[in-house]
Amino acid sequence: MGSIGEDELIDQMVRDYYEPESPSISNLPAIISSSSLPPLPQRPQSILQDILLEATDMEKQVLEKVLMYVRNMGEPNSLKKWVVLRLKMDGYKVSICKTSWPWVSSVGRSKVSQLVGDYEYIEVMIMDSNSGKPTRLIVEMDFKSQFELARPTQAYKDIINNLPSIFIATEDRLNKVISFVCSALKESLKENGIYIPPWRKAKYMQSKWFSKNCKKVCVSPNIEMDMEENCRDEGTTSSSMTTCCPSIF
Image 1: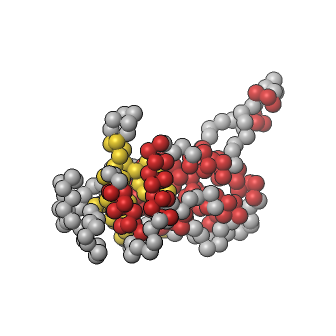
Image 2: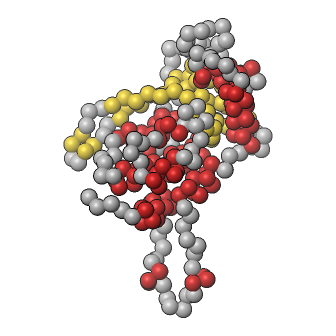
Image 3: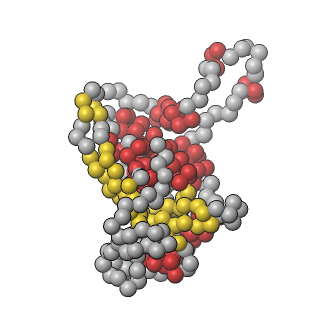
C-alpha cells in the first residue's frame, strides 16, 4: 500500500472531521475572486487546541484543584481515590465511576465474538452558576495514554503531544476530543497499513466514559481497600448498577 503525503493526510483528516459539503474550487464561477473564497482549513493541532481551550470556569476550577492535589499528594496507594477524597474535603459531590459495556465487532460479513470492556474514572457533579442546574464533569487522570499508538505517524504524534495527561471536561467537550482524536488515529493506522481494531474506534472509546452500565463507588477516608458503599445522596446501594450518565449514541 502506497504512503500518503503528510499534507494530503492532514487535509483529508480535517475534511473527515468537518465533513463539508461545498463545491470544489474548479466548479466555482470565474467571477469569484480569491478574496471571497472561504479561509483554508485549520491544521489539526489548531482544531484540537480550540476544543481544549473551550473549558468553562467550572472545569478550570476543578482542574486547578486536582493539579494542586497531585503536586502535594506524596505517595498514595490510589491516585483516583486520593483525588476523590480531597475533592470531597473541599465540598464537591464526587465519586469513582466504574463502567462496563458489551461490544460486538464485524469484519466483513462475519461477526467477531462479543467483548466486554471496563473502565474507571472520576465524576464530579457541580452546580452551574449560570443555569442553576447540576453539570457532570469527568475527571480523567491518565487521558493521553488512552490514545497512544506504538507506531504513530508524525501528524498523529503532533496531535497526541497536545493532549493533557490530566483532563477535566463536560460530556460535550470530552466527546468532541474523542471524535477528533479517533479520526486522526484512524488515518494514522491506515497510512501505516494497519487494521483498525475495534478497541481503537470512536464508539468503543466513548463507551469508557458514556456507557449506560455504571457503578458509582463512594470512597471513604476510613477504608483502605476498595469498597462500594451506600451512596446516600444517590439513593443507591453497593450491589446496584446505576446509570451515572446518559447514552450519547
